[in-house]
Image (cartoon, rainbow, N blue to C red; front, side, top):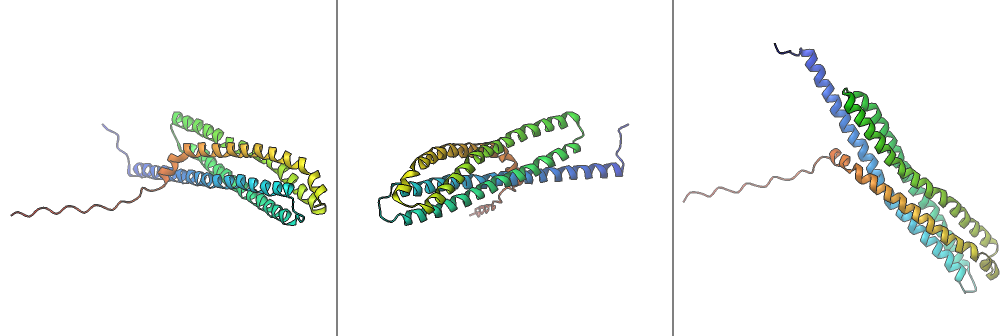
Length: 233
């Protein structure tokens, strides 16, 4: 005799299915927030690279200037240096937002594992979560490497500004030239580390893209009008 579910059993099963569906949807939404923050972080990092180049360009123009009054070049350098610091903060905040969204995503995933009753499937999901976390954390490692190189570079350029603020003579400018050349080499290293961070963002974002596609509803297409039936002649 086949087993019959009671009303309460079927209601409990239905509720469990609804809860699982809700968790799945929420998971996709959390993944979407994470990938969206990755998308926004990449142009912020690119702008940071651009501003580094502009700032160094104004400093090199100041070092090479031949005019009697170097103050316009100095003021331009000071202005671009402030922009560089501000853009760096924007870029790092974008990556921190990515980290925060990722933390929420992975913590919720860990919690949702308890809803999987099949131990084999639960173990597979747990293993996938660990692998995804390892890949995600590579972004943070790359960003920390860029951060480690950038802030000494920023402080050095700020020291150059302070130095020249009190000695904007031809001799004073010439005496700081070797520091400027060194800063140019440091900038190349920083740019490479930023590129590495962008590459990791792109790689992890691409791997998680399916979650975004699942979370976003498909675009609605308007139904094509049916062709009119030809009238009988």
